[in-house]
Length: 165
Image (tube, rainbow, N blue to C red):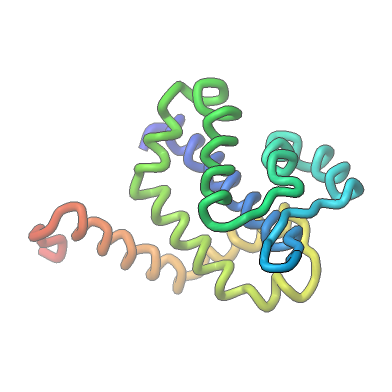
């Protein structure tokens, strides 16, 4: 993977993680709707701690959120803030389509599910989420899991190929 592509993937993964973190801690249930409610004090902290990501939070304040609006918010923020500005135009699209990004999404989803109780026990800063996730990925068990996912993805992309020669 090209260095720029790796950096672009890391940036997009960070955006996805941040959006997930926002939904995890700043969702309010109002009737049958889920809305993003971020207190001004929390926004002030985000502006200071996560200046490259705070625009995503600002775009979601008081919005009804579901899977579709969540994905749209990430795509729109990434397109406007990263694609063609931080990285060459259309590189983000390549990231979204890449097996490496799909693997990272799978791993992150597994991490959130397996740590939900711990994450739910009390508010955790986004920086702590990133640290915990990176540590988790270093474990042998997760590396084995990632290898299995990669192998399965390879078989899907290249049906009939034998990678166990």
